[in-house]
View 1 (cartoon, rainbow, N blue to C red):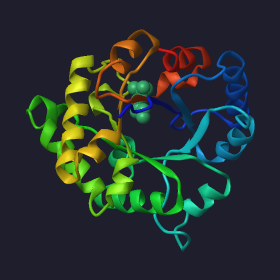
View 2 (view 1 turned 180 degrees about the vertical axis):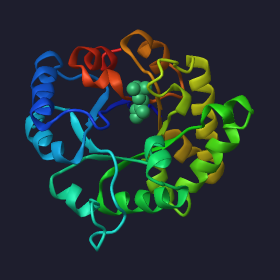
View 3 (view 1 turned 120 degrees about the horizontal axis):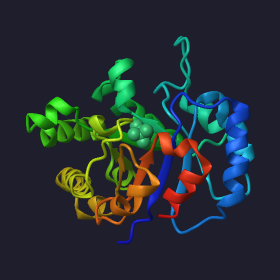
Length: 249
Ligand code: 13P
């Protein structure tokens, strides 16, 4: 089955609302659509403005995190209900920065994944090893554990429409990209984990992105690999011309 490639920007904690709207206008002015799915994942306070600014275009909008409960005494948190109310299409779950700085665990990732599907916000779940784990040769084990933890108890139909982003932590924001072959090797491995947990059909339809220093200069090498179905782009997604070059790789 042909999987549609999916390129998502992750703005992290960058851009004010005015800057976000300016990006949307500039990007819409130079990008008229294409064969690949495109989304921008922005800070919460920019999401409603971005949905408006991208209305009538094919560009989708995502959040970068959410709580798994619908509501409750969780000061500072945002629920899936709040995201669906403003039409948010995607939510990034379990980014390595949230695992590292905000105590995200495989267990909370799993709960958030299930909540996202329950509310119709499509999750992009992130997995990836740190440098010490790769250097020690443990990267496949680490990514397998994270993937199995994220998908625990997830029905096959949800697994099939999942987006998994493989982001080796050592390649994030460092300019040190995984080679196309390293990225392909791990994305194929993750597909194998999904195959073992579910079946061939789920493995065939799950989309697996690579993330970590994706730039216009390396986008084609990465995005033309068999098992790499897209990219999760940090820094280069902040610049309309760079993001356009990547989504039109
Ligand atoms: P960079 O593209 O800036 O390395 O960030 C990758 C990332 O973390 C995307 O989620």
